Image (cartoon, rainbow, N blue to C red; front, side):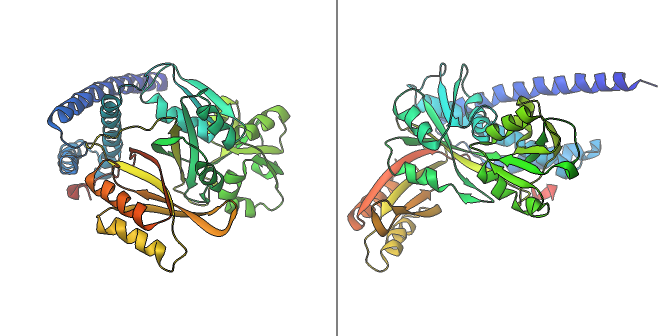
Length: 387
C-alpha cells in the first residue's frame, strides 16, 4: 500500500498536468479571440457554451463525475476564457495602453480588499505593476488625476452594505473616466496574531464596511468591542502588532496570510454570497469594441418638474437600453436636489446609445458621461442535461 506522502505526490503530479492543460487551453482561447476579431463575431456564444457543457457532462458521467461538479468547474473555465478574450480584443482596440510599468492606487495598504481587487484586474493582463496604497478615497483620485498612477481601483457597492456613497460623491467632481469594472468575492474572516479561542476574543478591529457587513455575527457576540480602522489592512496590522489572544481583525484570508495572521473562522458576512463591485478609473477613456459586452455609466440632473425622472428613463426604454442601476445622491450646495447615477448595458458608440444621449441632453438639465467600459458580468450558462 502506498504511503500518504506517495499518494499526495501523485495528486501533485496530476495537478501540475492540469495546470499545463489550463495554460494550453488559455492559449487556444486567444486564438479564438483572434478569429472572432477578424470575422467580427461577438465574444459570447452562449449556444456553443451550452453545447460544450452538455457534451462534457455526457463524457464525464461514465467516469464517475457528477453533472453538478462538471458544470461548476467548466463554468469557471468558460468565464476565464471570456474575460481573457475580452482583454485581448480591448488591447487591440486601445493600442496606446501600456502593457508594462503600470501603476495602480487603491484604498489601504497591501492586503486590503481594494488591493486584492487591483491585483485581480491588472494581474490578468499586465506585468511590472507598481502598487500605491492610499489613506483615503480622495487620495486615490488625486494619485490618478496628477498622473502619479495609471489607474485607481474604487469600491462602489457591496451586496450586503449597499453603495459606498463617498465614492459616488467624488465621481461628481473628477475628470477621470471609468475604464473597467470588476467584482471581488468577499469572505470576511476572524484573524488573530496568536493561536487562541474565539471565546477569548473581546475586541475586533476592522474597517466600518466589513464590520457593518458582519453585524449578525457581531450581534451574537455583544461582549466584543468594535474598533474602527481606516482599512482592513490597518486592522490586520494592528492585530499583528498587538499579538494578544483577545484581539482579532476582520479581513480576508489572503490579507491574513500577507500579515502572518491565523484564520479562526470565516463566513462572517450577513449574506453567504457576498461580493463588492469595483470601478477602475483612469485619466483617459477607453474605446469598447462592439464585439465585447459593454456598460456605460453617466450622471444626470433632471428638472424639478413632476415626472421628469420617469420621462428621462422612458427615453432609455424607448431605445431598448437596459438600465442595470439607478443611484441618487444629493448635489453639494443645492439643498433638496439630487444627481442620478445610471448604469446601462450599452456601448456608448452604438447608434441606440448615441440617440438616447442626444434626447436626454434635450430634456434634462445636466448629463455627464463617466465612462464606457467592458462588462465583467459573465453570467454562466446552464446545460439542460446537467440539471
